[in-house]
Length: 276
Image (tube, rainbow, N blue to C red; front, top):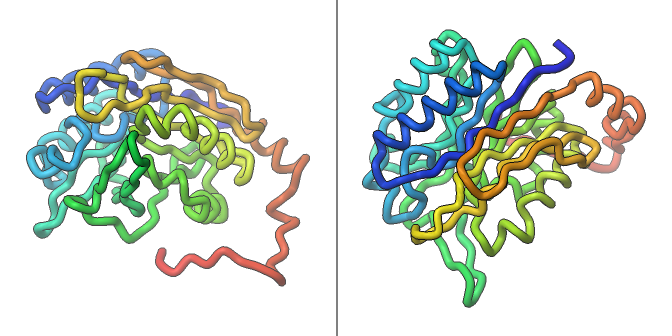
């Protein structure tokens, strides 16, 4: 298929896990009725974001939340990128994205590689590493439409991840994320556009909606960017579903017109992947 329909769920996250999961499933069903073939939830879709919340909301995978995602993916016959949840495994906590196929099978699991440890004086200080452990592997999955590469939020800042995914044949990169009101306005869209242009891929980001009463406020603005840097769809700050066609014929045309992959100087440099 040269074109398929992508949907991003921008959810209003509450402190009640069951309500968050119910809302997510409702949005997913709505997107499926509109023809979406690949659907993504935002980062921490089942819990408030914050280091103090991760231990309280953490689950095994499979577990309560991901079992419901598996069921709704099968019900709607879609590819479902399950945003992320706090995952508990062998005494450690991870920020983890689970992906389910149209038959409900777990296709991929991605644990956030780079943890969000930053200090912008007077604006925001946060250390995910106080409670979370980093993942140690890449994650892609195949669909009848294209190969998809996964990242989570802060991982967008590391160009190597996107470069490796492009080398592995990905045409769409999806980042569930929750940039804040300091870094979001400055870098959220810019990072997506730079990855899309530099790697000649589509880039999609799924954010929670803004909620000013929480301790950590996500910026919202879930977005889809094409390989020409054009913003195809973008949410505001409230709960919404963002839809966009992903035109793989256009992607192929761009790669033919500006053939950077054939022009790389492997005699001078290379991107090394140390683990699969």
